[in-house]
Image 1 (cartoon, rainbow, N blue to C red):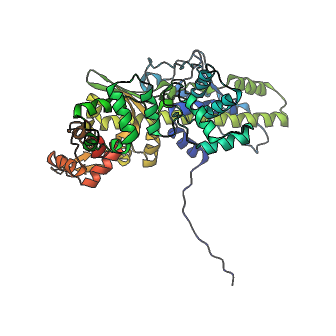
Image 2: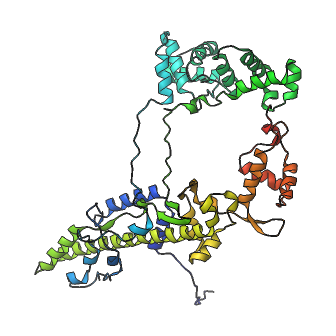
Image 3: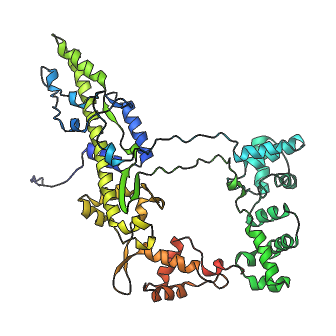
Length: 487
């Protein structure tokens, strides 16, 4: 049996403009610049101002009349765009004086063309006199190395691939023989199949000494004991003094476990961090600026003003002209919205960072990490009257340039824990104390997690051993056994 009923449902949906605004807020500075370039390509009504072309902030607030698509007649006066157009006589956008520093120049990083890691190895091969087949195998081996310089494939796999891809039919013994040539290339250690072989290759490139000879013996015959830092076992096995073993270990610690990664011309793109905010301490007061690249000078194209003026002066307005003006109106709407969205992004970033700076004022004044207060997204959202999701988007992938280095914004957020006095302290503060305790420990007898927990409890931070283990892992600090050193 079919029935009909009336049901009321309340739902909230975000408009496409709101979604785009949230995406703009989330973008870091470099990504924003790319987004603006894409918008300017898609919308010819949007232009970037040159040094002589700027617009005035007051023009943002003027009324912008809507265009009625179904109207029979169009008047140019119905499309009030004059206030959004650039004017050579208009002063610079006002936010330049308080949102970013005049000293923040937009500098381009020079690009240096250098040979890649693999290209350099191939160039070194050209200095060897090799048979044609050996050269093909050697070049294939070099091409099979990963970025760290290791050969992660077996000789049999190399033999099979040479047959299928190069038409070279050889044996595992022949591949091993050619690999010895690759092992002679620089940096030493390239072509190794594992860490043990990598370290041994580097030691064998060194001038032989008592320490290097012992280091080679240790790696060849007691590699497992060495990696687990069972120094007492090594002393007993080789019948040597602690000082002698210490010198051998010092030789091993000088070696590079990733020889390919140390190559300056490895071809990897170096990521240059562009800070979105700048904080400076001036006469014991904090000053906040937005990176100037967050405040681009945008305006509506003058060409569109000329088009509308031409339409205004035309006595007879055809249907084709109506379609043209409708297209212009759509582009102007999009350009105005984008300019407004960029301004809203600037304001949102600025007020959010201002609140974070005020909340963590003690830290920003002297850079002492133990003064960082517990801070969650809701704390800042309540201060500025914005949604938590908006604060999260601002903090995402943004960096702030401080007198103490460039910091990732989200690293300032942390949960709170109670200390011995019942006061809320930041987990960042506890991690810093833990790091300091481990730095000061006796490296001959590193402290296990339960002893670290006891020490932090004595300092007024009662936390469990498993929490110590979690924080230690987050700080990328190994367990006590692996922190042991020969003193």
